[in-house]
Image (cartoon, rainbow, N blue to C red; front, side, top):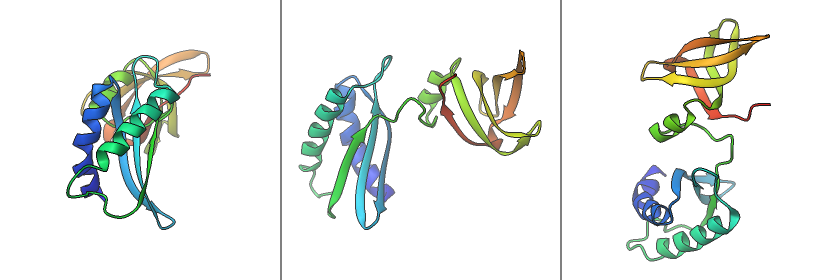
Length: 158
């Protein structure tokens, strides 16, 4: 399945870049007997709208149909969408964008008796992150080793 992504990513990325948008993620999966090519796109700083998604979907679909040999020989459904406000942080660009933003973190093991934290990402490097979290009425900085992070995503602060 990842071979398909490797073959179509350059084509898809070119189209998305030409429109001033950014490719967030791609996946090619089989669910209930149906293949899906899912492409997640976004636009900075205000997000992407449905008209832009529709235009990109049409362009990507047309271009994928012209690739020879066909990287998608089996029937599939093309889904092009926005990853949403609370999307996962995966790439270096995502990490840069998340700096000083509110994030949700799930850990493999507890730190200070908790496996889930939400707060503002204050800094990061290859080994650890610093998260500013609310602790009752005050804010404190918490250093978390990156190897303990099971998942991290953007979050909306309430």
